[in-house]
Length: 67
Image (cartoon, rainbow, N blue to C red; front, side, top):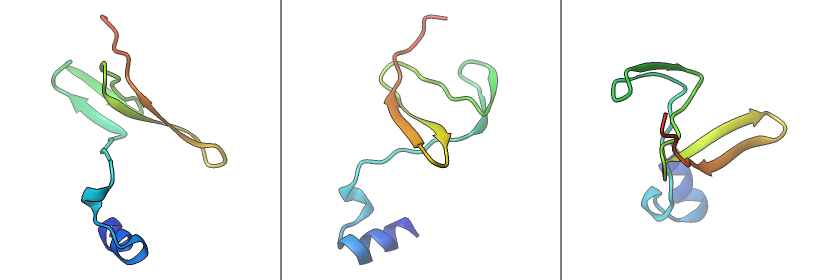
């Protein structure tokens, strides 16, 4: 759907844009943890932090945490 809209509105493909994927609830087998409404924020990882419907979201880059 996104690819069709980008093509028809901007005459560009999805490859012309920078994008990433995020999941709200998932099992993180790497850290052996269940994340419900939480995200990882490894160093250099792109993250999306939702605020609310009025203010939107924050696009950020994780700083990491030794714990």
